[in-house]
Image 1 (cartoon, chains in turn blue, green):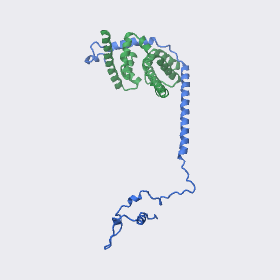
Image 2 (cartoon, one colour; image 1 turned 90 degrees about the vertical axis):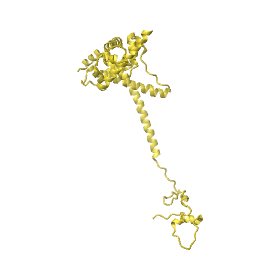
Image 3 (spheres, rainbow over the protein chains, first blue to last red; image 1 turned 60 degrees about the vertical axis):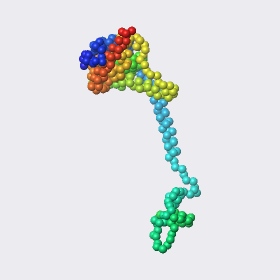
Image 4 (cartoon, rainbow over the protein chains, first blue to last red; image 1 turned 180 degrees about the horizontal axis):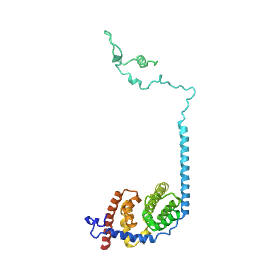
Length: 144
Length: 175
């Protein structure tokens, strides 16, 4: 890369500083800044102080983590315990359980699909089943 | 290399190292001094070890850059997150040390202001090449980027810098 690259760029003015001029400007700035540089000393105390600060911060962070883990462990311990069933309380078996929405399956005319029609016998399927019939039909066969 | 030789070399590099630390800390002098001290300690205590794959200067500049980045991250965490959490106030935006800017000569001030508007990477490459007299390849090694990327940043940075310097001179002449 040369210092004259920018001369082909129409956006850059002809009197824009070249690489050498830029370098000279940077060098002047460097001289100014290096003059303000502090003396070369390696202060080991700075590190110790910083180390102490860091260790205090680390101690706080570790304590917070341990406390959070302890709280989480206690919470998990209690949350994972299942409630014991009260003595004498009846627990319904899955085979004896009946869904409360089973009555929705008792549609009018379902007998037509379940029975074989007989010639000469009139049966009004459009009638709603009686309470007894409903109970009989709703009763599910026992599982083996 | 013996520890005493090492410290002698670091002493010879001290001015340039301070200049680089200043740039890595956006010209905040106190912060730059702390970064430099921490970098020296890393070398003395052996936390950062020189592998000899590059020049001592390139390697040590990398250590300074990394230390400045760690310090910036720590400050961001402390002031940005914890500070905001406890005080519920926005973190202060780090600004260049006004004393440092004011103490620079007029030409230096114009250069600093023009550079301040450039993206960080372009600024870093320009600094390493023009200010520290490193090659673009060495600058790429310090910044841990590819040579092609460094060249691109260098070329774009130079163009941007020229434009800004020309604009500031135009303004200055117009006054």
